[in-house]
Amino acid sequence: MKAKEIKELTIDELKQREQDNKEKLFNLKIQLSTNQLANTAEVKQVQRDIARIKTILREKQLGR
Image (cartoon, rainbow, N blue to C red):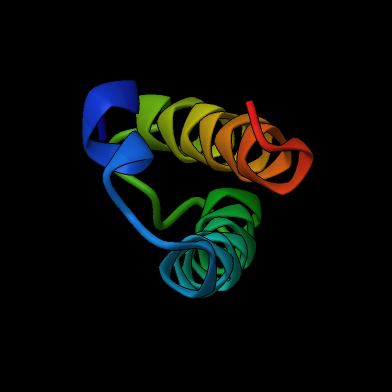
């Protein structure tokens, strides 16, 4: 997900996306630990998406 797409979302949508991505990350880590995950790069991508969402959410809360 690109930052431009994330900036267009509302605060409630951002919080929901963050929660969804955290759940997805948890599931990916479980799959990784049991050697069921085929694409290990997906873990890093989800982590970056969470970071982007948190950054933009904070910007919106500060009114920037």
